[in-house]
View 1 (cartoon, helix red, strand yellow):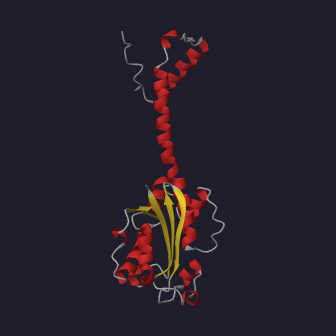
View 2 (cartoon, one colour):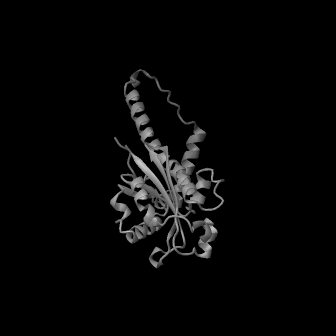
View 3 (cartoon, helix red, strand yellow):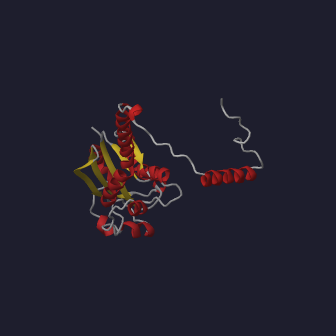
Length: 237
């Protein structure tokens, strides 16, 4: 059974190493490439204020978060939800860094201890769309995922959008497998046909077409400085 958990966080700032904390966690579960309906959504009291720029992104004020649990209070709940799954995260290094920092404070190990692996959809998108914008918003627009509900960044909303983006980004992999299967069946079908019974018409070029072809070859010969091989090759016996 393939079990994926799409995870997103909102934080007080950009640097976990300098004391920024998680204020929101959103997780969406997918089993065999279908949403299971199971989600985890947690607001957290970070014990510090968000940077003004971060507050503009997620809109979670100190007053709203004041009565919420700390990360240590819900660490077991998060670990139980993701246990045994493959995590799918956009810009995984950022979120994993914050989660691991919080787990370290709570003395609960690392997220890698309980999951089977981590997929970074930002790295996937950069491989698929080199040189293009690959933020979650940009991918939603490119892949026609409806993000109209995303007025502010919200961890659960973003995790749900990421699940749809991931399915659309990886759908082509299935198509390639299907194309290979179709090609194989067509090949078998062609091999069963007796082409010796089929009379194929042979249409010779007329004088005008021969002249046009010679003129094109002469142009190529001139452009290459007389280095074209077909003029020097002897016809096979």
